[in-house]
Image 1 (cartoon, rainbow, N blue to C red):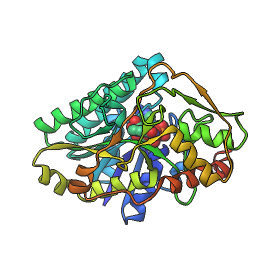
Image 2: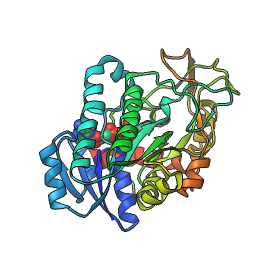
Image 3: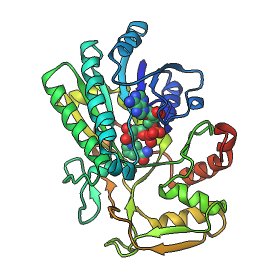
Image 4: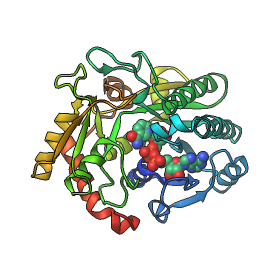
Length: 334
Ligand SMILES: NC(=O)c1ccc[n+]([C@@H]2O[C@H](COP(=O)([O-])OP(=O)(O)OC[C@H]3O[C@@H](n4cnc5c(N)ncnc54)[C@H](O)[C@@H]3O)[C@@H](O)[C@H]2O)c1
């Protein structure tokens, strides 16, 4: 199959492109390089441009009439930045995505997979969320994702568009061949911070929030190896029509996680086990807006998508550490 991947120069997009190739498919990358590095595109078919550029999309489809599906991953993704720059986030993630979806419908390219996020979920008592659990998007970023879920669901109800919405939990780790991974200079997410503390680029790892209502007081997440996440896309593209036939709807939402909740202290322990040394840890109060967290109920992913994770959190940590060593060679900065 040939698959248009918007945001295919990014972290998850470039690894998904590799997973598609691994599965015998051909990715076509559309990315503005707003944040994604050119080197992650490698020698793949590549269009540098904006998702809202309708003429460009017409050209892509003209040159690749055999595109079977689109994976729409292009977005702005930094939560605190979305609080400071709401206009840019709503414009790029909402308004531009609407242009993309409408143009795909116009061009007769009806299969759309959309990258949504577990950050939509509100707090539930045992932290395990199904696709029906209450939503409480806590930032402009998360609200752009919810808006696009709603818009896509409505468009699928009224047009030929068909949609599978994947709610990603917390992707970690890197490409199995260490050709791409986290590329931001100072990763703000927990594993990136741990790698920096372990490598001495920071004096300590800070646990923010130790009095949450979890088993050890720290936040809980569902860390999924990005390679497993990439495989979920391959499966969703391959089984697209069957998935929608099974749910008997023009669109559907599926959690993509491991099904295991891991607290920050447990993540630190797993990290130290893989790393073979302890990491200096400091404790601090939660940052404003920090979520207690959630982990995925993955019944629908297993039953409808026919997909489950293969890799462990230790695999993901090992691959993140290996990428930490290698990324200067790929990116030109440590
Ligand atoms: N990384 C996570 O933890 C996470 C969790 C849940 C959901 N997601 C979603 O997964 C998707 C991919 O995330 P990622 O971590 O790979 O992010 P990323 O920033 O690495 O990738 C996004 C890519 O989109 C491109 N882009 C942005 N705006 C564009 C536009 N208007 N036109 C064309 N290209 C544009 C960027 O250049 C970048 O390469 C995003 O939609 C994100 O919201 C990510």
